[in-house]
Image (cartoon, rainbow over all chains, first blue to last red; front, side):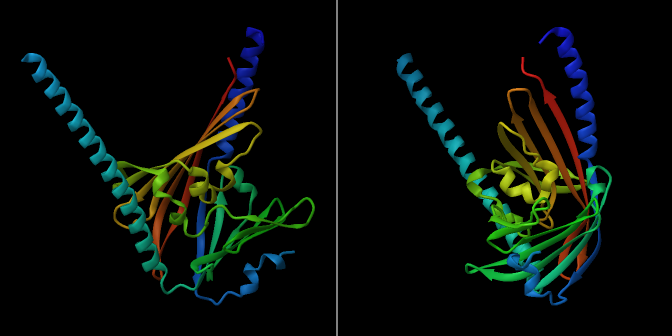
Length: 50
Length: 245
């Protein structure tokens, strides 16, 4: 790879780095928690997934 | 005379070095196991009266903003003589509903492309993540303060297995070629709950190398019934792409 091509590739990679770092940074907020509501066993039966 | 003394001193120094080295190794092993045992005790105390629970989460910012509200259902069950929480995750990504189930042995998902239900042997336990920490693959790394709270730091060799389910797809971007992962975990000395996780993934192919560092901060712990839950999870990713020389 020539020095010029390498410089172009590095510039593109820097853009990708910034974009992907930004996309991968986020927060997850918990909005509600319910305890002991008697969830059905069917919810956890993988064979019943559609 | 001088030679004999020097030899004696050498033997004494080597013995002292070996003693200190072995003592340090033993202490480290005790500390890792102690942290894991305390995490287990705290978890079991919190969860004793909880047979099921549901957590509703909302992502903010980054790629997570493409997903809508996520509901995670947990139900206590005995699988293979062991008490676990079966897990069901329901989320919506760009208008498409996604459901996955962990039944204690397998992870079940519906393939969005084919619509077929697929299952694979689960590598980790998503609800009881302390169970994924193996003392033999973990080193005690000392103490640090996180937001004014003393934390014990563990270095994890099998980071993908321990943290993969916690850090989800954000940290486990797969690509062709080789991949290695390592991580660190900060455990509160007060509550024995995780305060921070850092996972470093080094992946490389013929075209380039990619180093990803993902930091997850578990914040705003609140008491819900007997359970402590972090109401905010902040993830920060730093990506570095490297061209071969």
